[in-house]
Image (cartoon, rainbow, N blue to C red; front, side, top):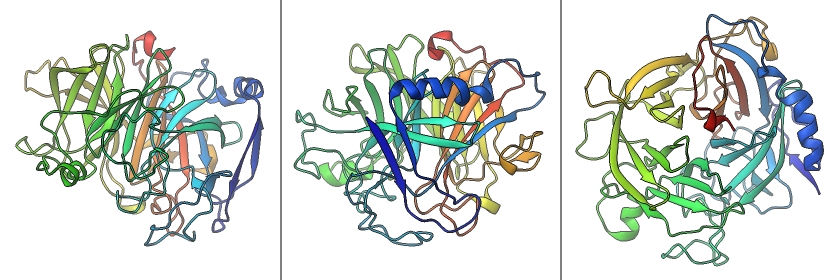
Length: 414
């Protein structure tokens, strides 16, 4: 079956050009990716001395799921040349990524248009994408909507057909289990959601004791203990798959400002183990964008400020170790990549010899192999404008070579 992704017109400019693309058949996809999509981070490169850009691809901001449903009726503000409502659902705002190891990736679309009140017509969805770095493009080759046909959510949903929307949950992080099911981290609860490979919820949303977001407080009357949309921004799987670790984006009331909780959840027992770790932001004004596992003890964590374009300063990847070797009660942090200062000696994609990733929200990192990472931005469609002032950001997808091996657990790379 062919999937046609149709865009709408964007303002002119090198970052705003859009082409219609049709991709037919999974077999063709795997073959095409084997020939082109992984070439930018395949082995054989000379060892680099500093984090170096090896690949760049971009999905235009104006990319929509064909034949879906209108969306964005309540989107207001500067839409950067777009007109709401949109005829179809946008393919936008990536907030989590899973490598399928066949040239495709399952990427979690972010929640709607910025808040619960204006996102009831945004359908929560896992997109299946295929980057082709040789051409600098990204193909949308499939995807699934998140649904609750079996009534696992005990409160009233936005839609009677139980298709989940941005008014129901704010899903920001994703892990794929060995059985093909998905664990998703939500910010409105915060909740852990468990869905099958078709996106259907398998259990009721699982709350985190002592942590209540304002969205849940409004519904239940229980006082909030953290800020709005400050729930599970990062979700990491242990190498064996038994545990997932949810990293909150916001500080819980009573905790040290700028200190974030990382909670361990046992997927077999379907409950939290009680083990909790702490990650400290470099500034209380910063936020985290993603957290994934490197092995049983280490995590890759994106930390960022709220700036974009000329005001973007802190966009970083840290290695964080839960062994706490200095005994300060915090995850040990080591700067791995400054995303505002990535070497680009080949001037890939027409950028200069220093590449920057100046987006407000950067929410996706995935390990490709021991010396290569991929990083994606969340473009907050159509609101963010970090790459070109006045133009809605595209979803950019970069690969970076590291000067030293991550020594990642091989179970996480297959």
